[in-house]
Image (cartoon, rainbow, N blue to C red; front, top):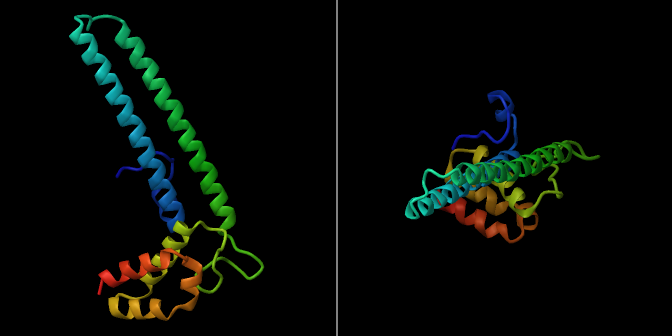
Amino acid sequence: MTIDIVDLTDPEYSDLNAVQVAMVREAQEKKNEILAEAQREKEEYRSMLVANNTARNTFFALTSARVDAEAQAKIAAVKDDLDFQLAYEALGSEGNESGPYRYPENPNYNLTPSQRFLVVRNYYMQSTDDADARLAAFTADTLARAYLGEFYTTLYDLLAMYT
């Protein structure tokens, strides 16, 4: 997937944490869907004009410009929302009085459950290459059960698939 929703250099993009990368990917998917829908709408309109023998009419140019403007407005809203989320996440990822947020030493309880899932998954995926040891460590982690809630079994199943 080509990421063009944000203007980040490669080093800046690699400095993003897992939650921020997930936010960027989700925003990029929304942008791609908006562009695909706009293209589909223009093609349907062109087909209608061809079916009515009015393909050389200026209606297509006007309608195409309107559809493109609406798509760009939607993309701008997605980009603004992403910028806000990245800025908010950067503020929230700095830490609290116990130090910087880092699982399991100082978990960030301000994250959504899906973001917590990503943080814990990345922690265990980076901890060791041995899938059996990774699963055993996760099973012994009492904090993960409370921290992940309903996502605990999902992550357990994911880690078990690697064994």
